[in-house]
Length: 71
Image 1 (cartoon, rainbow, N blue to C red):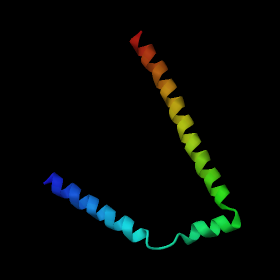
Image 2: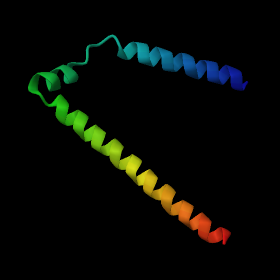
Image 3: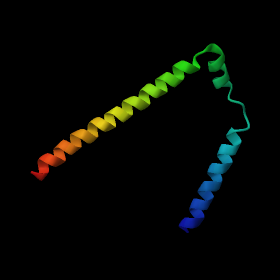
C-alpha cells in the first residue's frame, strides 16, 4: 500500500515539474535586464548565511549545555 502511494506521489511530482518547465521564466529575465538579479542573489545568500550562523551558534550552546549536564 505504501509503495503504491509513494509511486503515485512521485508521478504527481514529475507531472507538476514538467508542467512548470513549459513556460519561460519571464521574471528572471526581467530581473537580469534591470540588474536586480544581483540584489535577489545577495539577499538569498545573506539569509542562507544567517541561518547557518544561527545553527552553528545553537550547536555550540547545546554542546556547552551537554558538557555541563555530564559533569
